[in-house]
Length: 193
Image 1 (cartoon, helix red, strand yellow):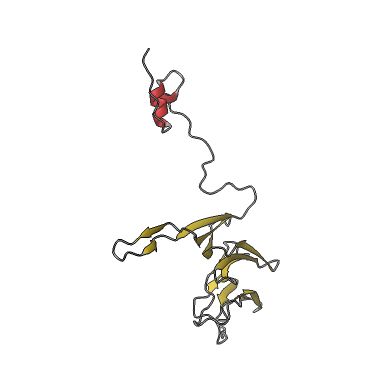
Image 2 (cartoon, rainbow, N blue to C red):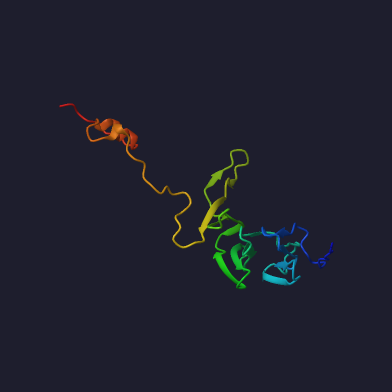
């Protein structure tokens, strides 16, 4: 059977997001609230909301959210009192939220890794100021940095190698010290006896 659902007038014009298991739909609205609806039961659940942009001169909406691969968690960003966004996680099974990144920096676009062990997001925290050679103004060329948050206890950071590289035969104890040192990125000068 085919069913039609109507969204309230304040619903987001952005795209709703289906959960990976196809059982829930996640969406935001112009009142700065994030919701999901269980398709089978038609139960609507409010994940969170922010009232900090109520008197803003522009019409904003929540559209920055993502599902975890197992469809249990929702990651999203919402504006805080200082107008910077903070990153949150919401557990759909237990109905609880956790603030993952604070609002000291502008944090946006949370996305889960494929195995749900990490959450990646953009954080506007690079303030290496340069001079624009054409306009004689200060510029921040690349303010955003990709950040990663470890979500499971005991996991290793995603970019750390787990084992050390074995030394090549050139670094064996009988080898010349200069060949071994070059491999380690250090130059050693050995005087011949």
